[in-house]
Image 1 (cartoon, rainbow, N blue to C red):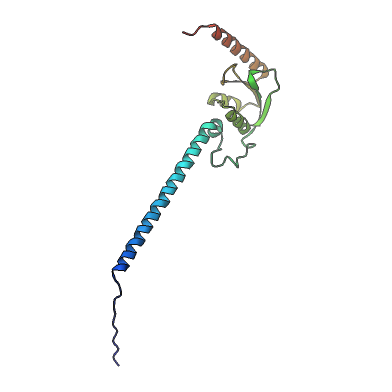
Image 2 (cartoon, one colour; image 1 turned 90 degrees about the horizontal axis):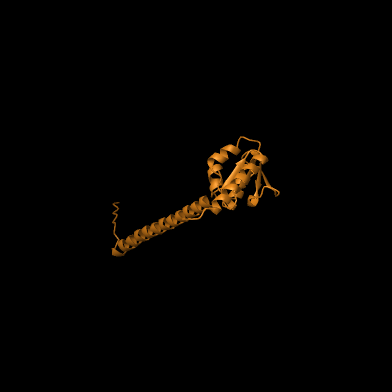
Amino acid sequence: MDREIRIRSNINSSFIEIERLRIEREEREKAEREAKWQKEREERERLENEWKETHKNLFKYTYCSYYCKDTFNYEYGGYCKIHFYEWSDVNREPIVFNHYPELYRFLDECDLWIDEEQNNMIKPIASCYISCKPDSKELIVATTYDGLCQKMSEAKTLADVLSTVPEV
């Protein structure tokens, strides 16, 4: 018994058209996905940069970032006792910070900047005293309360002298 197999093709032009449309759809979907990912990446970068700009101290002196800001432990980072006197008034009750990240968060919220030299000064000592110069956002850091009072007195004297000098 001889068996004969005949292969008949049912491929026509519509199959080629369907395959072309499938390829076009896949390319379009891929381009849409990549555009969406690019948009999301740009948005993340924008939010991250905004966070860095508004949280300069936290970003520079801790490992806190935009991505871990919600779970960051502000009680981590070493114990300290920092007395911060608001409104350049060393006679008022200070805000006491027991951890460095708490101080950095407060400074960021107040739009104050502690420079690297001042930060290195407060790290090794058990307690320190901080206030702003009168009518300024510049910080004064001292290791003792009396030292802070003296620096504030000098800053007030300098501010008084500069206020009498006419602008040219």
